[in-house]
Length: 406
Image 1: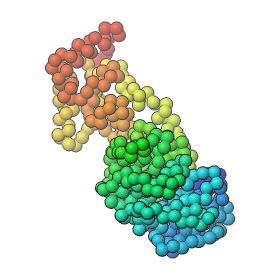
Image 2: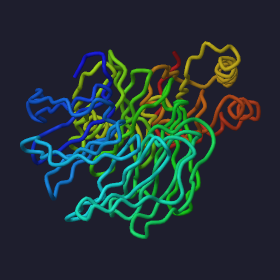
Image 3: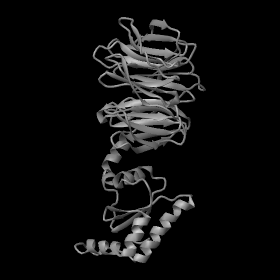
Image 4: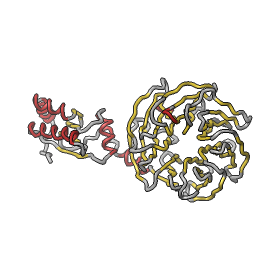
């Protein structure tokens, strides 16, 4: 693949130890997942390759292109089985999971959504359609539901088994670039051009939460096979690893080039395609074990000999900085020993503290691993003498604390 051509899609055939990469150059590149070396390349389209999906039962790789063709390749020999042409600009494509599945969900730039039965040749088009092009799609583990996303902030839910439109989960806002099912957690997760990550409940299709995940547009999202993790990649060059249950950042890597696609090869190894035509392999296994070993810092983040610990996120914003100053002044008036920990730049600790306390704002004060509050709460407690009484009460049955003030 040309070095100056983006890799839009990645697909893996784990049993065959193959990773397939394709994109704007119309070239399919194959990598060995163990040696991570390129083993094959072939030009299969004069247009963009916008989608790849692998049919395990027939050992077939299917590519969808901007030239309106669906190309079926034998995954072993990589010879073309058949090519189907239609009057559409095809975008994302996903296989429908089942034991002997020969069906795919196919989407188009015209906003159409199809279910394609390869064995019978039936090409069913849903009557409902997006008002703008469809960027991405995902299929549930049991193969009964599909979700599609695209322009105008549209996020649709479709019943594959009943071949009918279910509902628009989201409409309006930034273009949604990618979406993934987290069925084990009863959720959908979508990402968009505004750098936002949105969590949706599957039971009632309502939004559960929305956070700023990247500093620029997010290109793609991928979930691990066990659905315990997911990864997002964005135009800020960051690859972010997330805990799928608590929706919190576990780790992040900043790449030299802008990542545009991602897929999990195992529960911890992720392949990343970028804008310059490279594929990188990131192994999060050691990082996840380290996080697991330090789980005390997630469930009980304030581990210190000093009873009172203040966590401060230094900010260039004077308005926010005044809250930290107010809290420190209150502690000085209390004449109690305390310790300050600056957490600026430590995303993992910030996420852990916010999850533990239920509060996303800083500064935060803890007494013996118990979250008490921010600057206003602490100032009021000191003024009323409540913090002093609480501190001394916790010391009655414990050894005298050293003066930990820094």
